[in-house]
Image 1 (cartoon, one colour):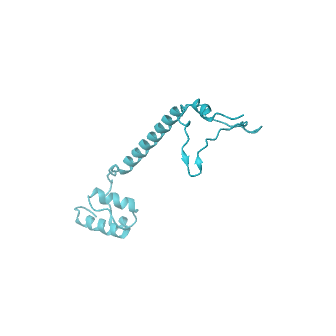
Image 2 (cartoon, helix red, strand yellow; image 1 turned 135 degrees about the horizontal axis):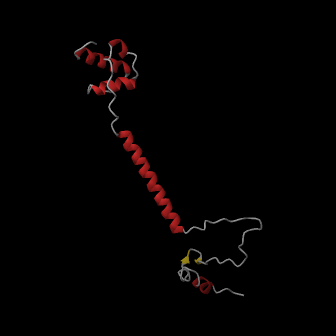
Image 3 (tube, rainbow, N blue to C red; image 1 turned 60 degrees about the horizontal axis):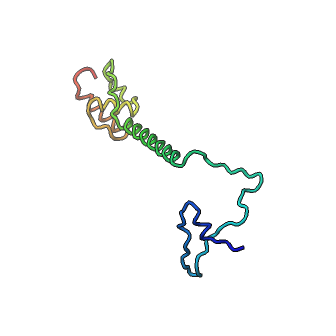
Length: 138
């Protein structure tokens, strides 16, 4: 019993776009049409997402945009200037400068509007020079 492939393919959602065959290197291309049972084997469960494809795509897009916004907010928070350090109740003593952490040294230098780049020894020296120039007990 010969199959009329063109008639079979014309009824598909493609609207008959596959009804004509082009000539290939080995002759006319023959579309494949399964004539056997294509159901999965017994016991095999095929799960599909019942949600509409467009709805899934829009949900993924919204999720990506939300993630981008959160990342942008995080970058903005990281790049925002830190709150000014609280004023020290007592003046900074020369002996205490070497015991400060790098973050504390940088905060002291920022407070004095000085350069905050460099290794700890450079920061200590820079702060000591600034303290020597300041009036008052140091």
